[in-house]
Structure formats: structure tokens, C-alpha cells
Image 1 (cartoon, rainbow, N blue to C red):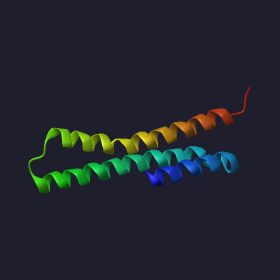
Image 2 (image 1 turned 180 degrees about the horizontal axis):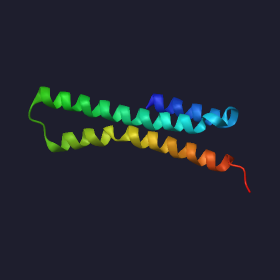
Image 3 (image 1 turned 180 degrees about the vertical axis):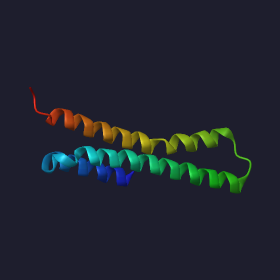
Image 4 (image 1 turned 30 degrees about the vertical axis):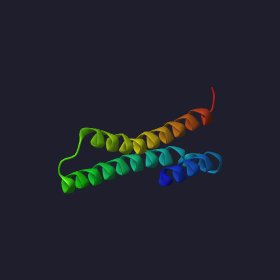
Length: 91
């Protein structure tokens, strides 16, 4: 989450200083969110394999926790698209 928050701050700074980078920073946030999601699922699978029998509520609780990072990355990507729309010259 810290990496994505730094990415959000970089996005806001880029919107002010380097508008050409806004979309790329948004895409990076989306990819980082997906990568952290996959890492979380991998680690959870490894722990389940070590423990053996695990209840479904624990599995779904971990899945809900792992889904937070791609949602946050997607929201940062949406912010980058909104910034691009706002900065686009009007006709």
C-alpha cells in the first residue's frame, strides 16, 4: 500500500510538473496493484499448504484483504484518467 500511495503522490506531482507522464504513472499503479495481489494470493496459498486444513472464512478473509491493492491501483489509474480528461484542451 505504501508503494501505491507514493505512486499516487507521484501522479499528483506529475499532473502539475510533467503532464505527459500522468497516464504512464497510472498504468504503473494498476500493474503494481495486480502484482501485489498475486503475491498475496501466492503467500496465502503457501500458508494454507503448510497448515493443511483451513476454514473457508479464513480463506475468504485473506482474499478480501488481498483484493484491496488492485482496487487501490485501479482507483489511482482512474484518477490519472480524470486528470488527463481535465487537462485535455477544449474545442
